[in-house]
Amino acid sequence: MNPVARIALVVAYAVLALAALGRSSYQISTKLSEAPVPYLVSGVSALLYLAIAVALWRRWAGVALVGTALELLGVLVVGTLGYVESSWWPDETVWTGYGSAYGWAPLLLPAIALALLLRERRARRDDAGVTPAQEGTA
Image: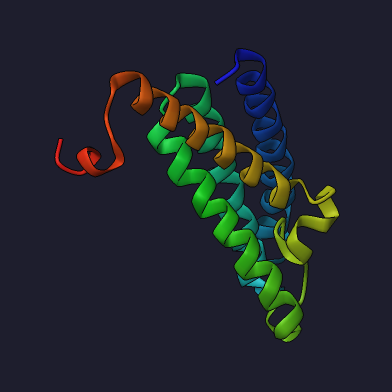
């Protein structure tokens, strides 16, 4: 992965981690009983963002790939459930409205990161001369 792209992703995930951690820490410590699911989802998202930032920084591609896939899945599930069954979400999470309160970064960022990580994985596999069929047998 291009070093500038990797650093940009690390910074973006670190900023999201801090934003989500600040928001969820306040919500969990002051009003958890009002909306436990949304506040805990925000806390989990903060930890996930931190894990992805560290994985990208340390070049743990597998961890970053799994983390970003989980993030995208979470954003899609929470975003959809927020529209389908809004009563389950009495307050917003980082992922509510597909991350609209955060400029849709929670939706766009994992899509970009996944594309870059998968492209890098494919390039490494091609450089090693491994075909997709051989990959599972190694």
